[in-house]
Image 1 (cartoon, helix red, strand yellow):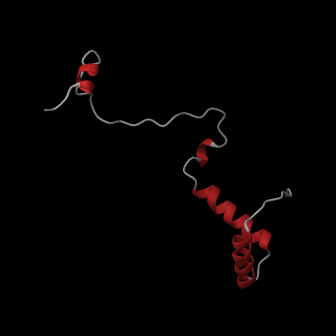
Image 2 (cartoon, rainbow, N blue to C red):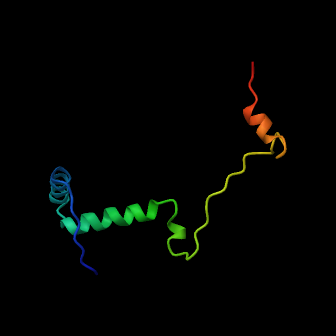
Length: 79
């Protein structure tokens, strides 16, 4: 294990200590479990070990205007 220093605001630290006391666990274990849960639930955890990350892409259907008509379509006013 590695030791690190983390700064928490006083109200959050009080709540964490209260939970640790209620569960009869060390504060460090409580924080480790919270961080483990966060890293398991993060949507991009599969990419954390990947050297190359790709941008998300979306399929939104077919284009309704050709690229040559795009400027005209964007700036036309519906009156």
